[in-house]
Length: 236
Image: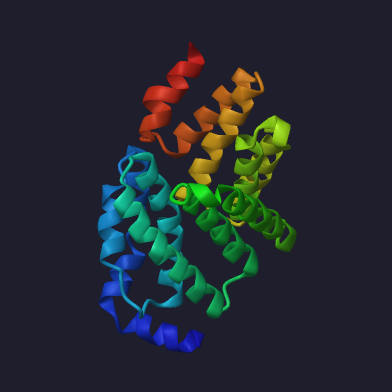
């Protein structure tokens, strides 16, 4: 199966060009405007993506859907949520590691609850369970660790959430990204770094949050939100 996908990749210039867009996708993320992501994702709507490209597309959908929801672009979010579900199934069928599949299934449930309020309890429970299973499956998967940090960070304390635990998971995720050399043009890594800073802030450790922001800006000096909004607020 892998040889078939390598064959398709080698003889398909479109997919070759798709592989080379990470820097542009990353710069779009840093700008805070993911319109470009939508354009690229729209151009990849096909049943015949090579495995490596399918991995990339699914991960960008993971971020793009959240952005669309934040921008109240409901129709776009719903459209890509459907694509996201199909791509998760395809990745699983092609043998993607289970911890990553579980991360995406958790995200799918988390996103779905916003469109199905009457099933909120079910979707929320599923999202948490998938996240926990992802970490159990692979304690070195940075996506799983980062997502677990988010669950701990955003879950109210009365329901078991913990900012301190979130901080620990973010730190583990960052270490995993760095140890696996998965940091160049990687929006997941920078997003986790920002969450890490925010966890320090919520725990009253502002100086540590500032230090994390300084590290972020050394890696990604054009990260608009950190450079122009969050970091200046911390300095005040």
